[in-house]
Amino acid sequence: MTTDTQIYLQYNALVTDVETGGSTILSYNLQMDDGAGLFHDVYGVETNTLSLQASVNVTKGVKYAFRYRAKNVYGWSGFSPVTYILAAASPSKPPRPHFI
Image 1 (tube, one colour):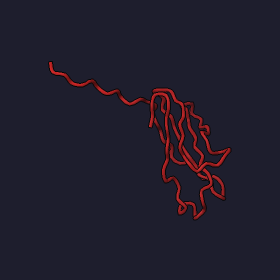
Image 2 (cartoon, helix red, strand yellow):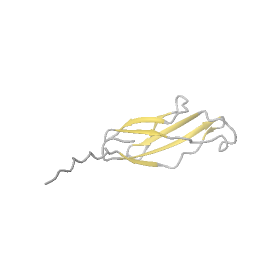
Image 3 (cartoon, helix red, strand yellow):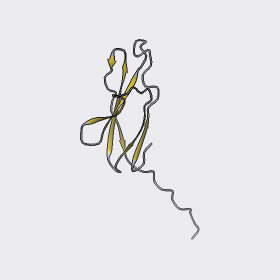
Image 4 (cartoon, helix red, strand yellow):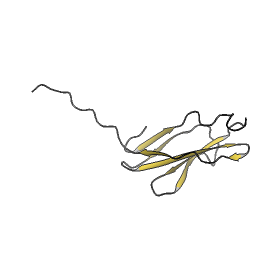
């Protein structure tokens, strides 16, 4: 979900125990690239989090890149494929038609 000032992200069913060889996921890490070409952590590195929900402030018209990874007892996985989101507001509702 996006507006011209914020992007709200929610990833569902990210990594199953089958994909980790039966190891429980301890944390997720979400990173964002704000168009400068460098990813930075949104959350999940300093403290463990099992939820991938975030709301970040953005600038209208900029395309942002996001990626995530998971941590289990063996450490961090590689990063997911990158997802791109354009910060834009929904179009406004057109006026009611009227007879001329």
